[in-house]
Amino acid sequence: MIKTTTYDLTITLLTPLLGSQPSHDIAEEFIAKRNNIVLPDDESLMLPELVERGTSIFHRLPDGSPCLFNYHLLGFLKEAGRVLNGKSNGVKNLRSKIAMYTTVTPRIIPLMLPAGESIDYYERPLRVDGAFGPRVTIARSEMIPARTTLKVGLEIIESEITEDVLNDLLSFGYSHGLGQWRGSGAFGTFTYSLKKEV
Image 1: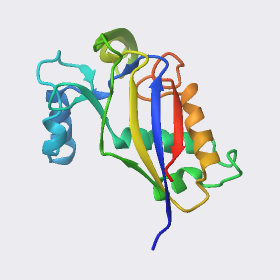
Image 2: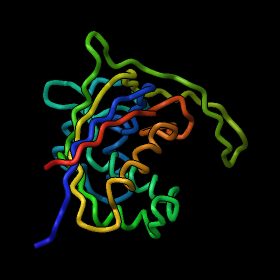
Image 3: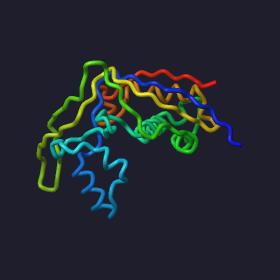
Image 4: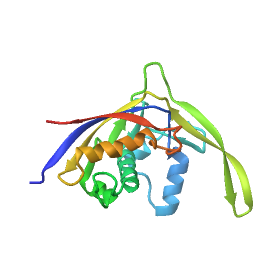
């Protein structure tokens, strides 16, 4: 039997988090063109319908509240592993070991907004250098407020991914963050609480 260690992880946003999912019509159109498939029903149905085209959004639970999928957090951990490769307890190939030995549950992660807060929008100009020269466009994203929390479980197969390594990876979120514009220090940064299940 494979030996695993399970942790309860609570993340609290220090800065707002920007939605990174394309709006419903754009997501389905892009996926259909590129892969000749459609979004799985559980993801497709979780995209809000009435949103301005071109707005990046959050998936929604049946009650309309925003959520992430577990791959958002696993992607963050793998990116942190790439940056901290060899620097956290000397673990080499850290990104691939996270991918092999780490499971994030549940698949759908509710985002618990602070009392009285709601989703807002963030608009900013983007400069794009295209085939016909530079141009400026406006990007628009749903924005979750700071102090929003999310809770997940981390199940780690016995390996070099120890509690100390997890703390190093998660500490990377204080400066780097989740979601769009992560790494800017202005969006998606967080603190966390990690507790080993007995």
